[in-house]
Each structure stands twice: as C-alpha cells, then as structure tokens.
Length: 189
Image 1 (tube, rainbow, N blue to C red):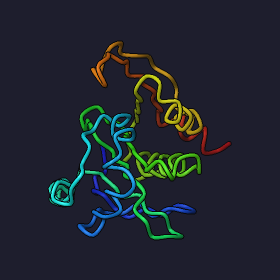
Image 2: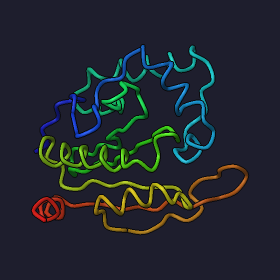
Image 3: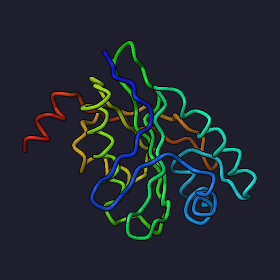
Image 4: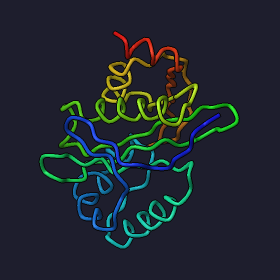
C-alpha cells in the first residue's frame, strides 16, 4: 500500500525542493522555461511571458491539494534561486510505480544538482511513499540526463524507437528503472 502524502519540502546538501510559488515566475523565465534547448530535452513548450508562466504555476499550485501529486521547485540553497523543477508523475497506485522527470536551467548543469535532486526524490519515493518501482527516461542524445541516470544507479530497460517527433525528426526515448530492493542495496553501499 502506498503512503501518498503529496508534495512536501525536501532538503539535500545544496538544494531545497519545495512547492512552486507564483513568485518563482521570474526565475523560471530567466533560467529554464524560456530556453528552447532545455524545453526541447524536456519535451515541453517554451514559455516566453509572465502570463504564460503564471498559467503554468496556477496549474501546478492548484494540484498540490491532491495527495498523489508530486512536483517540486528546485531551489539552490546558497542563492535562493529556483533553478528548475523535478516531479514524480505517471503515478500508478495499483502497481506501486511512478516516473521521475526533471529539468534544470543550463547555467546549473554540470554541478551535480540534478543528481542530488533525483537522489532526494528516490529516497522520498521508496522511504516515504513506498513505491516498488521508479522509472525515468530521456530523449535519445541527451547525454547529460543519461549521466544523471547512470550516477543514480538506475538499470537500463530499453528504448522506444521514434517516440518523439522533435525539431523536424523522430527521436527515441530511453527507459531506466530502479526497484525498491535495488535502492536498498545502493543505500547500504
């Protein structure tokens, strides 16, 4: 049985994962939602105005009342900047599984923040919600995301060929997963 508790604040060494706020709009526009490259890897539209971001935030914030809704603003502790987002989505309560998605602004890539955030969400997923399986995927060619997934200890499951039609061409989607017993074994090492 899953222990759905909704999005709760999580702290790691350098990050605070918390509810989105309407005041995050400037950071979102400055650091990732207006960046076509980041949004393309994340398979999301580009947002260019505060009104568009406000509508997105309205949707996120309104969903926090649902106990099986999990979406966090990723905030750098040192600066207080909202540098990206991470979510548990595709929640399958019957089969005790979910998928993680994440996106960080480019100026925050290569600092280990995505790996730190994913590890914090894995801990929450297995220790708090009690999922049996957590999966994650990336678009073909997304080397940075592949590195994050590898560092977190996921197992490669396979690819869905020509899954996305993106930037005028078809690209595949690569899937990885972690089972609860694998997470426990990694936690002990």
